Image (cartoon, rainbow, N blue to C red; front, side):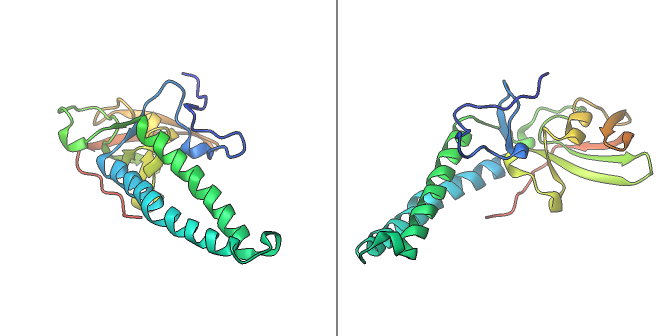
Length: 189
């Protein structure tokens, strides 16, 4: 499968999205219920709170005279553009979201999106990761994107399988120890 950017009007020519947030072409924007709720909450905050407050500040700053030397006005306009870009991004992301609830998932013994997987590396170091959407990754919580190399290596594996992970330093073996489908909670904004 070719790994090209998913461009359903998410990429603005002047403001490309970071590589770690690109969804592979032809793929859905898989996301957990908590991740979807978090994005929805952020969009609501921007539209109902931050943007209206900022427009009041910009109008006040504009009424103070010369806009070219007015720092409040200049900052406000720049921040308004940032908020509008983020609103556009979040709106598009939520439109193409495919919410997958691991708690409602059909019983399976394989690794798919929303699985929490414990595996052991070649050096006997074990890790537990939860496979989440690109918009909800969090290294501190071991929430990894389903598009990450580790997740792609683990996909469709079963307990006891050994999969290969290609890294810049060589190939590592990962032995799948446990697969669970449980609630994955992402922290609030």
